[in-house]
Length: 328
Image (tube, rainbow, N blue to C red; front, side, top):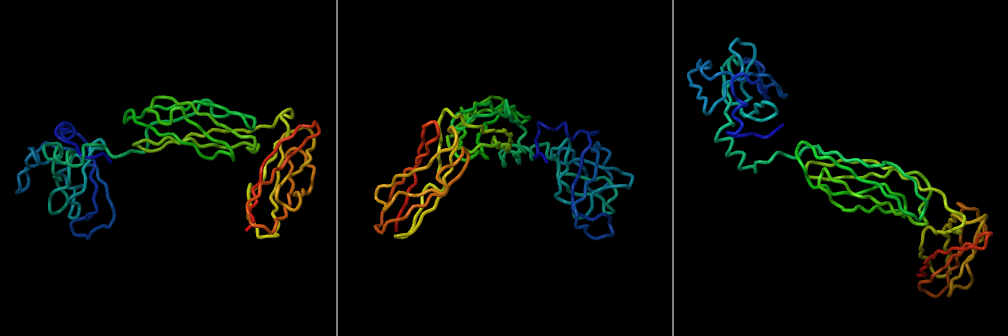
């Protein structure tokens, strides 16, 4: 519901306009309070036609609404409820007939009192639901792991006019990041969005959510990001999960090693200065996309040890990754 107005909106309370009143009051003069919110459509009348009560209807301070035929009107318990025209609060329920069947009188807000109230609350409309729009062009794309891909964030201002929008992204795959240029735009402007993947970003199709946050709310757009296959000529790329571990003296660490890319199967080896023996792999040879379990035996000397894992494919190309072992 829109907020109250002032003198500048006097046309909303001219005779002939139609509005709605809301209230929790009685539904009949002889009944009790309804306990529910009711809504009634009441037209605006000429104050001169409402001089039917002991209290004079002053058109400068009051709005005469409703009917004089007994079929609907405000009732006891409705006082203070809003009277709206075109979605704007232009009056507040004040008084009416004892039988709840005659004209309904509202305190007027399209006057100095409305100006005062508007000034007290800042004169601003409350935040809406984000009337601006946001989109992506294109809304999908494919990229090889370790490479970048860009799209354009588009926006359009809503009925509240231009506003600042802060951009963010979520739902990205492991190792991928999103960079906006710029990070904030004015609705109606565009921004460049770049997805950066790493060599370890898993293959697959992901739904990334782009969010634009402004004073009037939030809107989202979805980008379908496909991380494609590796080029065999780039050589194998091993990764280890987790990338570090902590064990007691003489204990075992057994992380999982995954190899992507490369030509044919890759053979795994490891070097670890300070350990009694080099870690072992089960299996020692894996196909692209395959996994192996590394077993590292911790020494009895507490400390932190670096394990370098190497994958060598059938073309003789190799890649490495590191595992950090902490001995307690």
